[in-house]
Amino acid sequence: MTTTTTRGRRAGALTWVLRLIGAVLLAVMGWLHLDLWSDGYRTIDVIGPAFMLDAIAGFGLAVLLLVAPRRWLWLAAALGALTALGTLAALLLSTTVGLFGFVESTAAPLWWETFWVELAAVVVLAVLAVDARRRPA
Image (tube, rainbow, N blue to C red):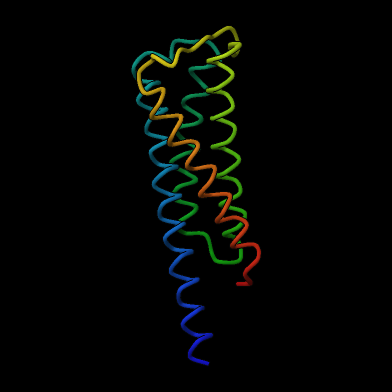
């Protein structure tokens, strides 16, 4: 009985660590998009509004990840992972072939920071989504 209780506590602690790391990554992702939006990306057709939506989504999903009840945690984590994956894909597309007529460079401000934050968010949130879905509430 003690082993089961200890294992359950460890699993619960790991879930909270993943929640916190995921929320921080989503908030940083939101901040990066908001910062770039305010630095001039807001004037770029389609890209500007998308950056504002990404900022709002990043902050909103970070909060959702922290307040979601256990039974809905998998969904909040999956939404966060999909959002991060979408922004990462858009970043890579804009750097290679362009996106909506906009071509980015890896030398652009915050490009590498954005890449690593979004990649980490995809990994952490995907792990959390799978883990939360497997473990009953």
